Length: 391
Length: 159
Ligand SMILES: Cc1ncc(COP(=O)(O)O)c(C=O)c1O
Image (cartoon, rainbow over all chains, first blue to last red; front, side, top):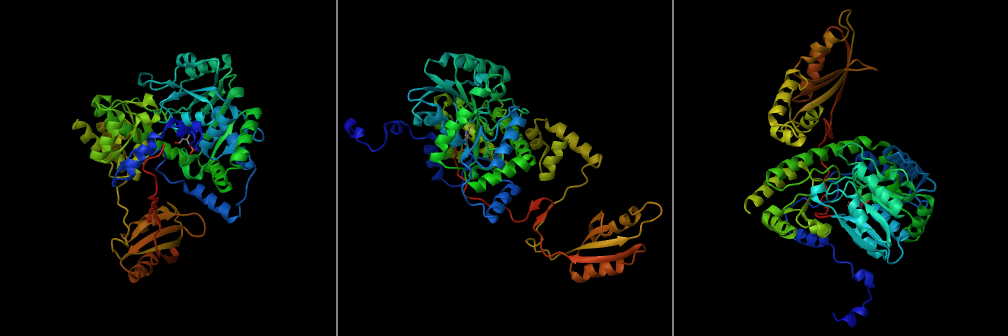
């Protein structure tokens, strides 16, 4: 296409600039094959616990089929307030500071759109969840990645944050435990990063969707560092901890001014989150803890199992402290992430996502999800062992 | 220990090697702990859950409510233990409420079960009454659903 033709495209320039997702490319290859063992799945392999599904059915039986308040049902927001208070030690007013969204995906989008002026810079750490960069760009911001390193267990260093800050920096996005690395952010680092945010008047968007899936006990949230509550948007959801990806429920907690701003985006873009899903989410918070713990214990054991075998095969990885991904370094094989993933898929029919799908910093790694049944993991390990030995 | 039990309760065939990898323990250590659990009778046995219909085993099962008189020494225990010893009795619980023992009995056909109840169970001295309910179909056994949920549409790759 010529430059002139490009200018006549019906598609907005900033949308055209967004590259095709590396995950989508890979998805297309995997989809064309059969009998693949997939370690590429970013969602729990459990179905939603029955009592939660049953609550959704009951909501339908009761005729709960309408819109709800733009902010979400009062019952769910009250539950969220109690849950966040217990989890993070931070109190939010359910009437003015909590907004129920269509997944954390929408919460991220509305938060970014609510705070970014065109050209504002937003920092995020990389390798990271695939939506961060495009969501910033779609909100007319400038995405500024900060590379995290295997030698630091992929945690974010305050010193690296400081180096990336410019007068145009508006916000910092955090995701710990992290998809795809499973990294966490230690308290000391949270405090130093918090001090930088206060000094440079930055907002923090903390996506803690994997917080309940932590294998190192309850992790503190940066929002609980003194001085952070007023400059933090706390994001969490139900997809991962309660195996509720298809219900599409997340939430944002933030001071009234920010919640009001996000509400402006949300009320016109989405109106409200689906009522049946909100009813199910309320049940999850009320009675879902035992089922959640059961799934978490299961993930932890699978993590141990996979780590044991990867380390044995010389695919070194740090021990993820949360989420359900292992991020082994595959550079010893002499292959790039993409070569490794494609050859493993073609030769052994095991799908793992090439690390560069999570940003250039992911090169040299692949993401293996252990949200996969144990029997599948056992088979996958055998096939990967064959593959690596053949190199 | 608790986690070893959790794993074995789900999968009695899990090897010490595999359990060790799941729990970050040497296989030898797992073997030692399992042996200890067996010796202490914490692990009482290992069984297989079988779908009798699929295995074409024409078994008849009945749940029997039994009322008994407690004895001066030992209360219900003596009589309950006596009843539990019959091979036909697969399960035997002491219950609160309207009856005393809940007994699950298995037999080759209806007559065999009925005969066991009328000729053996009901005639034991101390047994006051029995009420027999035949089981028609199993949906879940020891925490395991017979009809597993199948969801084939899960995406093979997702972010
Ligand atoms: C870090 C992170 N944030 C957000 C999401 C999106 O979650 P939701 O289903 O709540 O939209 C995901 C899903 O993979 C994720 O990994």
